[in-house]
Length: 277
View 1 (tube, rainbow, N blue to C red):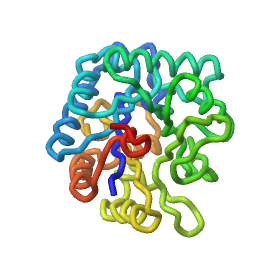
View 2 (cartoon, helix red, strand yellow):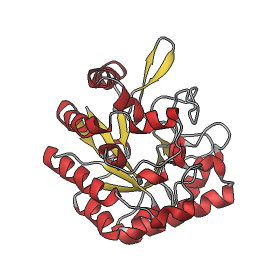
View 3 (tube, rainbow, N blue to C red):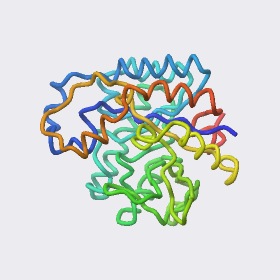
View 4 (cartoon, rainbow, N blue to C red):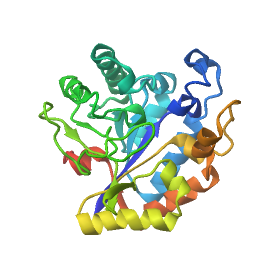
C-alpha cells in the first residue's frame, strides 16, 4: 500500500509554539535555514525514489523561489500551508480566504502547476471553524489535510473521521486527516511530528503498518524541515514543555525518515487521494 509522505515547509522561528517569543516583524532579520534543510530532504527522497507533497508557506516561497522550483522539478507536489503560518482558528472568514488565495496564487506562479491541496498551520481547523473547509473549496482547492482527530492541548478534533471524507457543506473538497491508530477506545497519533521524534521508531512503524493492514487505509505522515536540523538557533525564554516538544530527538529524525522510506511505499497526496496523474 502506498502511503502519503508530506512536509510542512516552514522555518524554525515560524512554529506556532514560538509565536509569543518571536515577533513576526523579526522574521525577515532572522537566519533562515529552511532552504538548506529542504535540500537535504530532496536528496533523501531522491535517493529513496520517493515522491512527496510539500505544504509550503507563501512567505517562504516568495523568498526562495528557486527552492520551490527545485521541489516541482524533482517530481513532488506543491501544496499550500497558508501565507504566513497564521492559524485558521485565529482568522475570520474574510482574512482566511484572503490568506489561502494569496498563498495559492504565489505558489502556482512560482511552481507553474495547479495547487490542489492545503494544510492549516497547527491543524487549526476544528469544530469552531468548519466554515474554513467551504472557503477552501470556493477558493479552488481540491483537498485539505487540516484536521487531526486526536486530543491535544493546541489542536485536534477527536470525533472527526479518521480517514478521508467529504465534509458537510463543502461538496467537492476532500478532507484527509493525519493518521491515527484506534486503540483502547481512543485515537493515538501515528502520523509524524513530535510524536514521531518522541516515540521509539519501532512503535511508529508498527502503528502505521497496523493502519495499512487492519484498516486497509494509506497512512498520512508529516514532518518539518527544521526537524532535521539539531543545530538550529534556540530562542531564549522558551518554556520547558515547549522546549522539550520542539527539540526532542532532532538529531535522530533524518535517520528515522530514511528508515521510513525503506519500510513503506510512499507517494504524493494528490496521486493517492485524488487519482492525479
